[in-house]
Image (tube, rainbow over all chains, first blue to last red; front, side):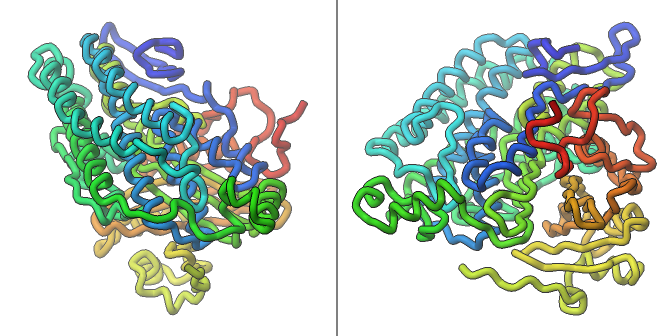
Length: 380
Length: 165
């Protein structure tokens, strides 16, 4: 099955051993999208790695930016101003909604519900417009930089986000109206691809895949980063461990995320969006043209990079798919000695065998959709 | 925010549940410890890595029951050349610990932890593929990213970034 199969969400190849319609054994074959990002990182300056991180999990670029920036900031011991932190939370939650919308649309389409896809992509388009407004890019945003944000949010941005956030819960009701009580959808998802709590932990599942099996864990709440401790939100957990349980978790997360966006908008602090660290953070364009020092710092950062004290850091963040961890090792030079990404999809893919063996081929499609794999994240 | 200096004295770090449990089990298993940037790193004797993982997974006070990640770092040309890095998480207690095992460069071999956590399967295959570290007892140790007939291990430091031409 695959790598060109539409339901594998990219270039995932599954070797299936089948007995009639029943799957006996399932072996994922991956690596078709392997681009050696980890190796490339070792040859770049710290700040040049940020655009590479966008391309790992391309459905949630800002989550990747965030994990990398937080890791390097932790290595540097850099303090980030409150406005930048709140903007990071805001953008990160919009990214989560964006990613979940792609998941919901494609997952429902795999199971035969075409309409939901069109609705989801309609709202996703709004979010991509917001991304474009704030960063100039729809998908590969690179909006978070080491030490803060790339740009100040433009005029009128918060109003646009506000109007989206006010509208969106109604849209989620729409999706739910099409799916949650739909008998065809329920038959394809309830009791299908069951994953027990023990298996989920032992196989390294994370995110909604783990929470769908009854484990109450969310790094935003349990190990808060970038100011998540200031926000109130619930962590949806289901105990059934089937495709429907994971669907319920993610749809609830859509609602929680929009709640966080509303809180971020209401409490957005004033102030700078970059840390006060001229040797690390690029100066504003205006300053560069008027101040000698700013010009020198700009030249130094671009040509020589900045050195990072030796050490190592593992920074885990809650991506839409689970625990996204960046392990960055510094040897005290301007280039990272080693950057390793713990992709949530890479570990989640392992549970596929547990979910599908002994079941029908048609259920494999539902199972792949329910763990929400992104091949860029797996192959890196 | 100035960086606090790293603590490397095992005596001072004894209160961390992972270190306390390992010392209680086998005082010789922990070669060194380091607490830096709020993260604890323990260097484990390489022959004992699987048992150390099993001990931590089943620790009664703070079970490190979740394996986040396995990776490696190549310190070429210094010896011991490789460090295999394990990131563990305790889901009930929300504690983290990093375990490391040092391996020499001539023939890097270490025991697989797939019998402790099946999750290690993909991670160890990736380390094998990209670093050439072999894991004994791994059920399916084959290349995972690169084609099967690929020569060399790309993440080694003596492997050029552009590849061999």
